[in-house]
Amino acid sequence: MSLIIAIDGPAASGKGTLARRLAVRYGLRHLDTGLTYRAVGHALLADGKPLDDEALALEAARGIDPGALDRTVLSQHSVGEAASKVAVMPRVRQVLVEKQRAFAAAPPGAVLDGRDIGTVVCPDAAVKLYVTAGAEVRATRRYREIVDGGGTADYAAILADIERRDARDMGRADSPLKPAADAHLLDTSEMDIEAAFRAAKAIIDDRIAARNTL
Ligand SMILES: Nc1ncnc2c1ncn2[C@@H]1O[C@H](COP(=O)(O)OP(=O)(O)OP(=O)(O)O)[C@@H](O)[C@H]1O
Ligand SMILES: Nc1ccn([C@@H]2O[C@H](COP(=O)(O)O)[C@@H](O)[C@H]2O)c(=O)n1
Image: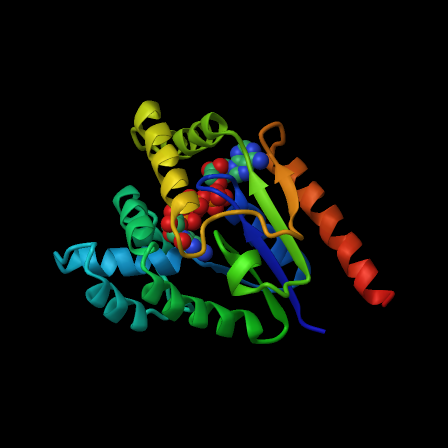
């Protein structure tokens, strides 16, 4: 039976880290849906196009292949900001959601992480996790990620970016970031990566066991 695990949460909450590990653990494919929005923002930036033109963003969205996204290029800070701007556009979301659903539907199933997976993309997912942590904790993790990778970072600017993106993602009219009614909340503020993985795995194993007894 195909298994779909939906993971949502705000920026830098650790949902991607968890999603990658869970995909390996359960032998599933993984899609970081944020990369699809980033790819649209990046295409516009690369062509010097405005980020507020829905027709241009829609054209870029139609050309996105979820199976061929370059994380290294797309993970740049400026691309994340651009992504959250095009992500407010309903027609862009519609095109990307269809591609994400097609990815999720292929056997043996998949782990998808993003902002609207449990609420919109895969409302029938077998397991839904909403991963969160305090804004300062998330900013510190992002800061460490950049500095440990040899880069330079400004903690205050990272925190401001996280708060701005939270507000845009939670406040937009179409598919705002929020936990699905049947999502399991996982606040990792006081957990390291290993503890968060163990907590997520316990939730998923429980759900799988319950499904198998039906
Ligand atoms: N529980 C944790 N404890 C400490 N650090 C963590 C934890 N989870 C993730 N991290 C680290 O925090 C940073 C952000 O994690 P990650 O990229 O998984 O977040 P994300 O929610 O996918 O972010 P985004 O939405 O911006 O893509 C990474 O450097 C990751 O290694
Ligand atoms: N399902 C999703 C995933 C992402 N977004 C938007 O893209 C931005 C970048 O996402 P990251 O996970 O790579 O940080 C994010 O801020 C959202 O605006 C989305 O709307 N829906």
